[in-house]
Image 1: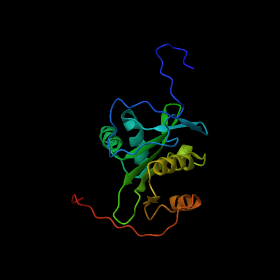
Image 2: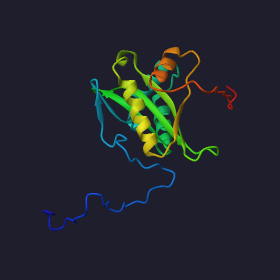
Image 3: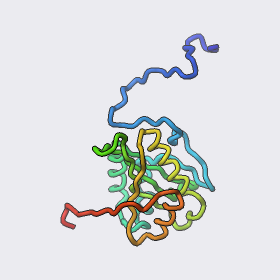
Length: 184
């Protein structure tokens, strides 16, 4: 029963029409998908925002990809406008972990494939379950977005990361090749 005379009564499962039409290339978040933040081991998991650029740049440096904060902000804005999300773990205002996952269609499968492209947890925040929680949230988003599987590319030298992914149920089942197109 509505308490406000202007409120519209709707069954619990009815949804109000959106003011803006959804873009067809953006997957809908149907699960938790971090609509609200999630807390884990002293850190709050949430979606990244452009203002996180400086803090994310520091994490990318730890991963071996030194990047200027303004460049990260631009990249993050592009990423957030695509079929992807960036998740961070925030501990007291400091971003201590980052996970990005992208959704793309392939011709050889009926469902989209999700690719986890970055996972980095700062050295001081490791071994607290943050990476595992970020991957879990990314998988939930991918599943809710219709993906049939998640793939991960991980550098050959990152043996600890390989063991971590295998502990989460991922299998080493492919070889990846890459080629720079920008002459670097």
